[in-house]
Length: 98
Image (cartoon, rainbow, N blue to C red; front, side):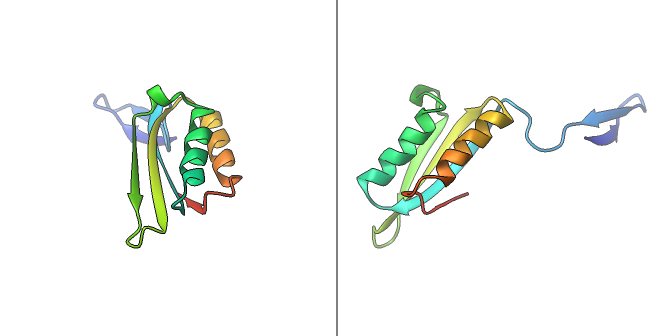
């Protein structure tokens, strides 16, 4: 925690990093296949129901060979986020994630 001076001159504790719950964007890249899109959607919906996603967007590469899929979700805890990221990292259809 970082300390800061409040209006009354007292030191306040400010949280560092993520404060839960929070909206968190997950951007994944893969080959432009049905399997990639299905894998992304399955991984995320295993943790957060589709109707609770904040947003999702897909972009194709110039030659349509690859696709990026960005899903913004409301994450409730660090543990939940870590589990989602672990599943993303273990998916062979996802080439890269940021």
